[in-house]
Amino acid sequence: MFVLEWCEFSWAVRNMFAAIGVPYHAIELDSAALQKDNVGGDLRAALGVKAGAPTIPQIFIGGEHVGGATETFDAFNDGTLKERLASVGLSMDASSIQNAYSFLPKWLEPRTRS
Figure 1 (cartoon, one colour):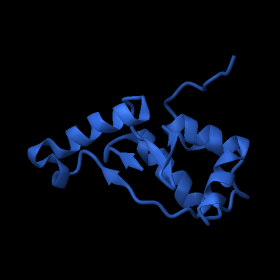
Figure 2 (figure 1 turned 60 degrees about the vertical axis):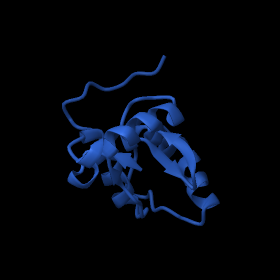
Figure 3 (figure 1 turned 90 degrees about the vertical axis):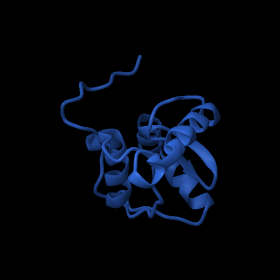
Figure 4 (figure 1 turned 30 degrees about the horizontal axis):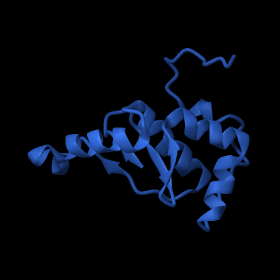
């Protein structure tokens, strides 16, 4: 996953993966190591082109783009995240989670779908 260290949406996805027991690798685009020569900024620009969205986080499983935080939560809620993880030999324990959106910051207004 490509994340920002300070981003609450990035932390929400990390917290969900930790809660369901899914290992992940986070590339922190705003880390001190990636600030040199604007490497993080260049990666973020390239990621925006590849993902088709400038938002962070952006999640990939087995090299396949899942999307940002909301797409990842939607995939959890509709079962496709479990399928994607299984396709790369990973499992998850979702028994204690009813709705992935519960990991979002509490200051957000609830999303409604039309």
